[in-house]
Amino acid sequence: MSHKPSVLFVCVHNAGRSQMAAAFLATLGKGEIEVRSAGSQPVDKVNPAAVEAMAEVGIDMSAEIPKILTTEAVKGSDVVITMGCGDECPYFPGKRYEDWVLEDPAGKGVDSVRPIRDEIKTRVEALIASLTPATA
Image (tube, rainbow, N blue to C red):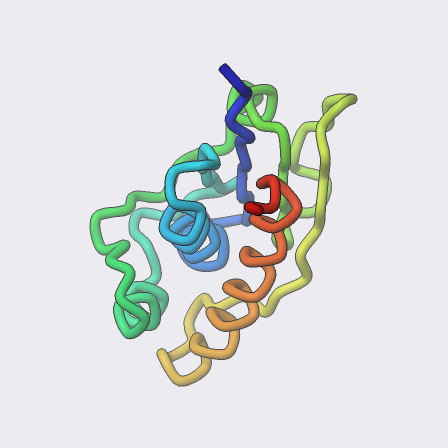
């Protein structure tokens, strides 16, 4: 049985960028990739504008809850993608790290969140292509 790649998305609040990225990867990855998300300082709930922006593209993340970043989550992931959490993410050798520079959707309306959502989708599609073997 082959190893299923795992990805951890990390941002500060785990309420916007990392939640949207995880939702896209869970949907577009079709179960081929294990998905986690966390925040270095998670807030109480997911950004309503991010939930609305994702609903517009048919992805429901209304039930998601921000989670605290743990060492175990990083250890258990093959790829760790940070989004503005700086040095708060623990580093382990042998992991693939990427830093995605994305505007923070916190406090913004859905009109401002849409372009961030679309950029995340583009990056997630490229990530999937890099993690899954090409189909013949």
